[in-house]
Image (cartoon, rainbow, N blue to C red):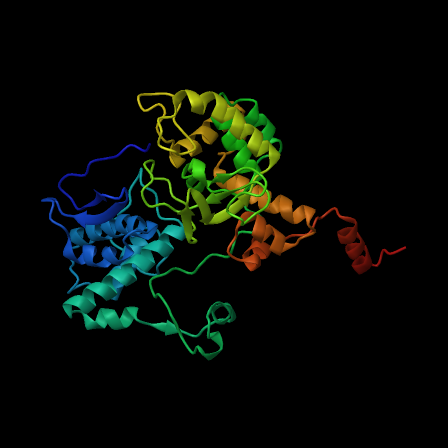
Length: 398
């Protein structure tokens, strides 16, 4: 688990443990009073991962606002642009004293988009509820013309004449083609340095599916239908259901949240991933050895194998750390991350299906075949078809 740092004498994010096992997030002051403006904005996100993300993004801005002597009534669009510049955006203006100083790093592209969305939503909500700063509200409530992608996504896209825009959001960088894959031979090298059946199972499951670490660490035993013709009736082959649960004890949660339910102990819905024979073999090796010896009856798949909490659920952060350390022991270049496995299997599926993005989308549970084609689709530079096309253009046909 990640180490926590207690913040005293400043605004901080307060985690609230719910009776049903979930967690809520709000912002409190040094005297532990709830910040009413922040709480009003965060409350509608109850039960979603966005509440946590926005809470930590917003508390950074509110601390900066206090340093600058600003309030909701006095802050301007220019001030918000200064803040975005202070956290890493490229803005054509001076943004004052440094804010994120080492060891803190400037926000990346995704974090800047999150911060921009958070600030716009927060100030539109705060200004409207208090009836102040109409100038800022008008500056934030801008629109733009819809693009073809916007029209395709909307139910009645052909009648749309405008779309909401965010003047604080930096320009999105182009999608990175060919994301970072695993080093050549990485899977075999990693398999040779793993020490437990659990770690071997995690490696196998990440290699043969496109599971995210949160979804993998959040699996319960009842989610696994590792047999033919399971009772759920949704997939004839062995498979597993990745279900978003709010109250997992290890705080792991699936990123995607399709509807799911449990009827008479049988899970239906959620994200469905096919299971390979190697996945099933590694599962039974783990279950009959380490899980049987240490599990404490919580019903989750991955457990801790050492330390004072042995037998308790294993977290997604711990899985990332295991891969990182294994990569170092194996002498592999760079950092080994679960995301690289997801990229690798998508790329491999495209290669063996001659670029069929619909198959890759289904295998990886990606949201869009267009995104798969834009990011992963590429010709084989050494294929006969590619070589023949170049030779034809170069006039070298025999």
